[in-house]
Amino acid sequence: MKKVDHIGIAVKNLDETIPYYTETLGLKVLKIEEVASESVRVAFIDAGNVKLELLEPMSEQSAIHSFIEKKGEGIHHIAFGVEGIEERMNELREKGIRILNEQPKIGAGGAQVAFLHPKSSFGVLYELCDKSSIKG
Image 1 (cartoon, rainbow, N blue to C red):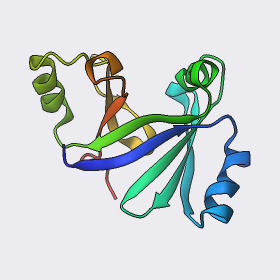
Image 2 (spheres, rainbow, N blue to C red):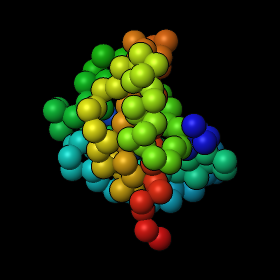
Image 3 (cartoon, rainbow, N blue to C red):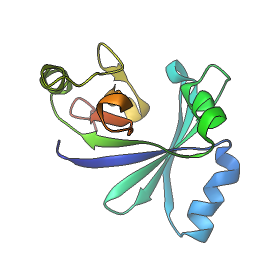
Image 4 (tube, one colour):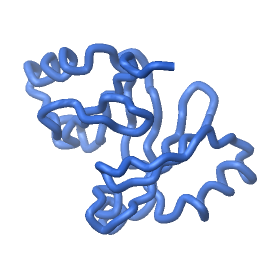
């Protein structure tokens, strides 16, 4: 793992949440995008050495919607930056770590991502985030 890339935070409504981060905390929104495949709207917040990724569900089928229904708004995952995500996934599988997706999928910002099962990581949902193939 290279470093913590971002912290994912589940929110019900980006438009209501963003002013807290910008006006109250004085942070800056870098961009907002939709990840249609995950039915989620994402705001990237610059928090210095780490980014915050605010995640708003776009439908009841979204995993973020299910998370909020069960646990409420709050920290959803911690993402580690990696290079060579498929190799890293294989290394972790060899160590007995369960991974939620068989292959990397495209996440916010075009990164390749994979999630470690919380039961394999002491209750924490970790994301592997590989941005090495992103151009620009």
